[in-house]
Length: 452
Image (cartoon, rainbow, N blue to C red; front, side, top):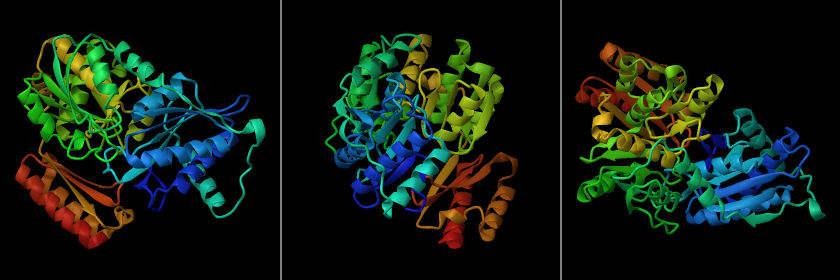
């Protein structure tokens, strides 16, 4: 798997790349590293452990819990809940560590392990590096220092986590959602209970699809990566809007009443204006990544909102937000962070905030989202190439330079190795969709030739 930790934890095919032994070993390593860092000093450590509904999550959860308890950490099992719920509960319960088992939008055979630090924030890169190093040392034979007797961790289920998290979501809304009919596509994932409950408690009339997880159907033709069913349901039910989550519900995409997609950039634009109106957009600034559509940047400039851009990955958006005390940030993919109410991207919270803006203004989502015009953008994933050579290949650099000359000031090019999958992403924006497709196709061929 190369470096174990990607941009969003450790992921791989469950029981092949990501085994029970690895999950257990990483959990023990995390406990030891955090103990060495002084996180547990002066008290008995506690961890919150949750998962999405993948079948493999059942045995991986058992391995993680066993590893933590064997390292002397008490464990609160919260069961199937969204990633942001685990982050929230880690902070709200004063836990020293949070662990989420999920591969987010990936297909069902994959799974992942994501760690949260005290307060519910993602672990710093240097801590992940240390965990990986310690894991490797002990995987090859170095013995662990193991507690015995009363020193081992205790394990219990924390069923109250569901209500506590839903209550938090509803409590932070600026207004209620009465009068709205909303279709929710839960991707047969971690928010299948949470999201419908939260929207209903907030006053919306809720229609759900993709909310019957069986351990095998997560993200299968539904959710934020497959919007066709949501678009059809919104039109069929005469809904005001639709909300789609991914498997672990840390992201949100939307559909307006006509069935048109509203992506993460547009959601960010709508929420930025809403928060500025409430004086909640600190420094009149929003944080986004270099993958954001050029139309988003132009819209923010026009509206007098400052845009700060980071590397791709919501962890880098969050890092910038925390360092500069910004209140809103996110990605085109639908990871949106409202830092006053969440420590990570929260798809349910984002959907609730978006719906609250529709209800509060009386305007349609289509009208609200028209604040920005999406420039044509083509994204091609190129698999089975050496993604580590993206920045060092002279042939690829020449192909990119040629594409940039062709596009001039009316477009841009971005090549990025995926942090979670073995592929390179080629993104091209242009004023004309055919030009964007043509340039992207040539660059994808160049990536295959140079890195294949």
